[in-house]
Image (cartoon, rainbow, N blue to C red; front, side, top):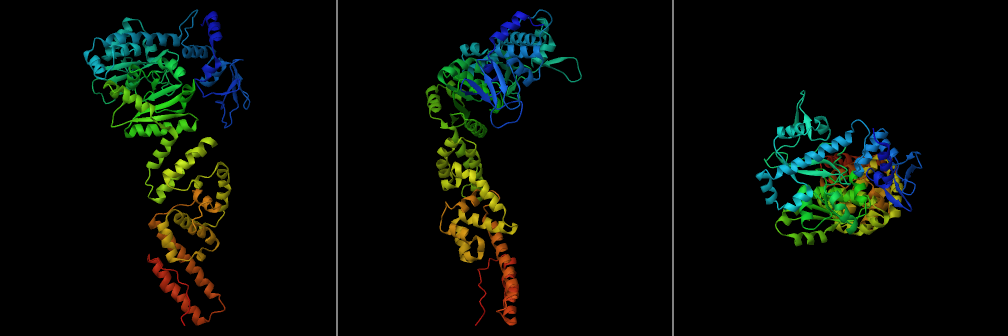
Length: 559
């Protein structure tokens, strides 16, 4: 049982904003903080946290309470468990009057195992040689608590000799039970170890790097009651003071990158724990509102991770830049090789997140291919539409220049609101007109096919769409109906093969309708009707069905 005096001391130390911001992203709103309520679906924030009253309340679903109540409801814990969780977040040591406390025991096991790992390092020449080769100094080894674990039985023996309960070691993610057996084994073996700390500096797990060429180069502790790798950033507890002071945070890919960054004086560096940057990291990144610098390897995996992170951060309103380290180098290697100034120059000249995202999305497609260009446009537009109106407008011209299309295609903020009504008008068209609209949309983006179309047909054949086609011919890109057609994903930009097929279908439909009108044309004699129908059926349509694009024939009667 938790001692009452200890409980009261914890409760008096709680900052509700700090606790809740470990779970959801809070944004300042006057004297309070706001967020989308985590207890029900909503798009407009109605969840308010008051730092002066130390309470929260959702004005939509009516939930509310203090920090302890929030943790109870969010984590589905009872009252004592919520207190233990908050103490863990705050790195606060609760006192207990009687009985065991699982959080306290788990933390004690983690701390003693960490001390043992650290002592082991000096006794293993392979591990120390590896760290020396990677450029890690003695001071960095001490600062980050780098250690070593050997064989599995050595850890089990250590736990038993020091009366550390195996069940708690299992709960801490240090050991695991063998299938259908009562015995345990160490999760990490023959690895350099890196202790992982919560944002408040409490140890919560370990990472391990193989020195025996194990296929899994890096392994982290599993998910535990203390450790959630999707919410934590390696090195954050050591970097946070500098992050708040400098208003800057460097996010890299691995333990050694963080360690070497700090060793070189870049003390705001942190890393994700074997996972991509996710929305669960955002509450931590929001603290202190720092500018974000993504520092990733320039390989394919690094580029993809950078693109995903750039898109997510930009859409969530974060400002920052990205640096991709060139020629297969990573920050740790460059710093170890004495290229500290070069690293500093790279960090200071990173590309802004939004332009990077736009460029990478465009580069994924062959922009010479109209169909792929349309897909690239759709992706980039979807991205821009998720940004705030002012930011969106600022990057429309840039996106248009990358794609080499008129910026009007993206539409103004007001125009975007009108697109749905335009699309709904287009969608009311009869089904057989989709082919015509595909043709018009295609030639609006491909001048070569426009020229080919006009050499075969006359615009008047398009009847109710003649004015739309003439808009394309006259290169009037701002015409609302044309903008609406281009933005509507129902209609496609065709490649040459598809264009030919659609045009042939259009001509077959035209001539079939023409033959029907000839039958009912009283101005023609039976002989004239027979001649024209035979011309259509046995000549023009037959050739079209054989794949020949037949130039428009006005079907004038021979003199």
